Image 1 (cartoon, rainbow, N blue to C red):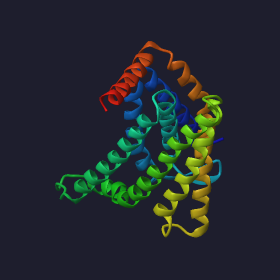
Image 2 (cartoon, rainbow, N blue to C red):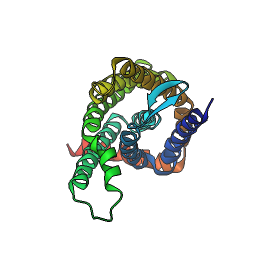
Image 3 (tube, rainbow, N blue to C red):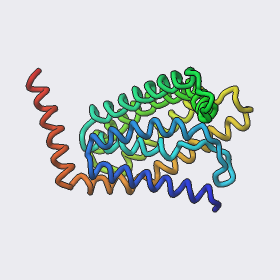
Image 4 (cartoon, one colour):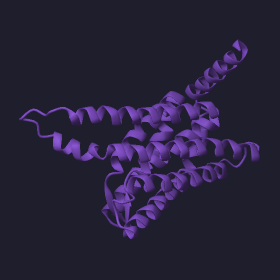
Length: 245
């Protein structure tokens, strides 16, 4: 196991632990902010191609994988509406970031500026990456929210590990195929493209397996007074809206 592999595993564990910690400290608002942050970060990190375990892969899969954990936690403890709201927040944030950075690139730099070429290199690809990501993100995340609720009804609220993995792994497959097709077709030869497609899903699948104990840690975190109060407020708000209608 080399340096890249150690860093990737450390990053995945940090992100998974961070998801649960943010839930424990800030409840649903923290998770929604975390989804927004992850959506922006993974679309920057995905531009880097690395060698992991002897195969070619994009980065960003560990960051993006934990977004599914965050929306699954929201679905489990707050309901489908809150997880869908987080998905839309991430979607709009990515559109805003892409638009703002295009304005930044179009502005003429000062003669003393040294950052402009680097920003152009990173965010110049952003429209295509963003189009791929927005399409894949919305389709996959909405499927994940639907699938998690579907399996929750089928299992009558039991087997959290099964619901989490069934919804996430299928959603990750959808996301990978849609994203890689839009983002990378024509940029790489067929062999490299298929390798990126396959390995990207494999690493997302690994993150999905790794997040299983963390969703049980989230269940423990949900017993804290901070989260219980937050869940109660969310429930009261929903009941208030129903009565108002």
